[in-house]
Image (cartoon, rainbow, N blue to C red; front, side):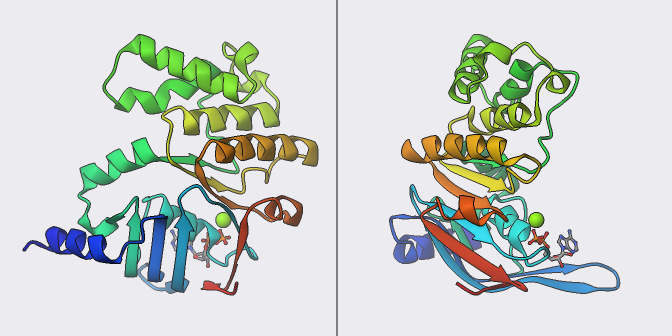
Length: 239
Ligand SMILES: Nc1ncnc2c1ncn2[C@@H]1O[C@H](COP(=O)(O)OP(=O)(O)O)[C@@H](O)[C@H]1O
Ligand SMILES: [Mg+2]
């Protein structure tokens, strides 16, 4: 049996059907020439299919690291990570890229929109990596913008939108490929509370449609609206 077959075989036995993301004994150490940083240790966490959870904790406690692992942007230095029922170690690079593109949407505190593309073109970007006709992509991007309330702004450029509208465009880009998992790293961190509430309502609507959401936030009033709060301190899960 190859390593990847072994990992897949183990998965079939240990993976509960409803855990879309499972971390078991996960550790993440960042190693540079001179220093080692233990960013996460002993993380055991199941995110159930369709769940909406928030992650809280002080700056530097490992929240973004946790989200990056869940989003397959990085891999644990110890422990196991399963996403959509498969052990991450069983994936090759091409599989990982495909999984990120098709199953996972990312939203960040900074919007990462491309300034010299229209909002519509920005939202279409993730679909350019997939096969399929241009017209279908255009239509999907329009629908995604309608879902976040930006149908009337699709030909605008990012600089012509408010911060809240730019974040809504970034959400449209994250969900245009209909991912099953949405990972949001302080999505309201740069917004005032009114705009933050609007973003939260949009996330709640995707959750109601069955999307699994993990959101890092500093705002207790937003975290309380999610189904479960995971708290980190110094790389450890404290609740
Ligand atoms: N790429 C990296 N290289 C080295 N250290 C890192 C890297 N990313 C994060 N860290 C360190 O790991 C710890 C956790 O960081 P992070 O996950 O970004 O925390 P949070 O998002 O909770 O503020 C911090 O001590 C940070 O300095
Ligand atoms: Mg962070």
